[in-house]
Image (cartoon, rainbow, N blue to C red; front, side, top):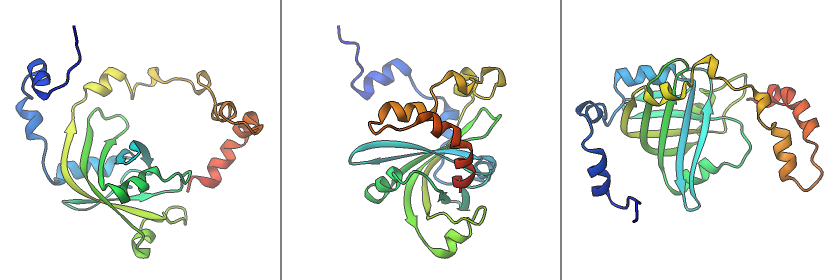
Length: 204
């Protein structure tokens, strides 16, 4: 017997109708309540799609780094990274994006689904300066759908519970992972030793 779900009708037969509140909370703009959530968030995941497939990237800065320009628009600085620019490559070919905002200690999350453009306007980039460093570009995102998610996922995961934190030493180090993938004699231990200083010099 095939137990794979392949149609929307099959899904709806299993899950039933969404609650009225689940439908009510989705709007096509950024309300004052949703603006407050965005203003307190120091971390957002950014999902994009392109010809090679999907991508989801973490973005973080001091709370409020995603700027609400108006009720339909948010702006997100593109800080220094590894120059893979997977997100940006996707956006220039397919503008659809999805944002998921998290706030430390808060169970609810906020989503924005919309369309992004990449701006390199000098004045706009200058307005997002951090530690005297400018982002190379700004994502200007037009919101199509905005809604919040209830606390269940974060409650089940105990994401903000200090007792649930995992010591970093229980996982492979960054250097050891790169060394395992490298064929050119990469020194993982040296990389790990120098990484704290590298972070200080390159975070912006």
